Length: 424
Image 1: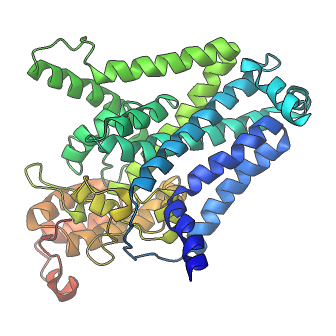
Image 2: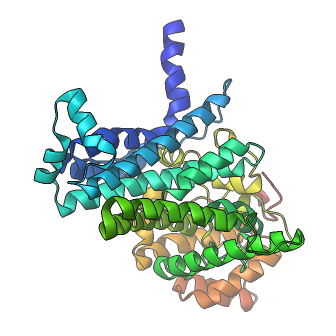
Image 3: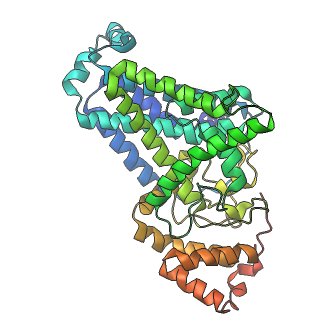
């Protein structure tokens, strides 16, 4: 029994960190070089898709006797992501042996890493390395960086979150997300909430621009309340962008324009991952600006693989209802919250093909209208339905505005959540 418990403990705490294991596995491959990097990247993507398709649902809500371990695991994950990003700079800089990394590897193992890279690396290998570093950036900026920067009562956690975000040029997230998105989600003021009928590509452009602008506006307003100029050193946006500039300068120093392109590629992967999550997590949901967020204002996913691959954030409904709850304590809300059509990874794949996404999400949106929305929210949703261009939603709006809604109440099982009264 003692042995069983001893074996279970690492799994119980470490299962949220599959992304970290992927990053740790990539570190030696970045040193070895060649085709293994490319096949590893392909394998990671295939594994993510397969695991979501096969893993079933996880709705348990276990307790953890040593939650402080989660913080140390997150810190280790942030450091691992930074190491992998620095190794990308080393790869791009070759034959210049940045920091003598190749010489150190040869001294310890006898393996000539520099020669191996120069002989075996191709554009495909470099692209795969950028994607893997981008996955590390998404982990460090969104999954774990997001969690750490929410813990404002822990300054070191916030620092580690921001540090990880700097290495994918993503520090705006630590400001815009908790102070902008969490206050404005599901309203027109939030650029990270997709409107019904808005395809992923248009949304991504609008969201990225809107979030950068909101980050500046939030800090400008905060400093104005303190009687300070927006250019004051207290501006967290400027400090974050200063950190990012140092990272870009490091890549430029290491490998010139090729290095700059590499770190921009890492940042692009991270931004794409965030916008995929944003698109899926709140698509088409609406809220009155003066009403509190509740579990109905975010799409949930209890697909097992999604839960662990996203470090628990796929239980997004509870996260938005109460952002003070750490990821390991988020509740499943299996019946009380709206759910995504599939797990996060597959939902994103389908979102890349707008007609497929529309076909999948339209019934989900109507289910939300019928089961979860308040009458005021339903009115807003139906206006979006009418303008969405999605036939099923347009037809529902025509029925609604023609007064043909008499059967909607019966569609809410046992009247559950017809007024959306359950908060997280």
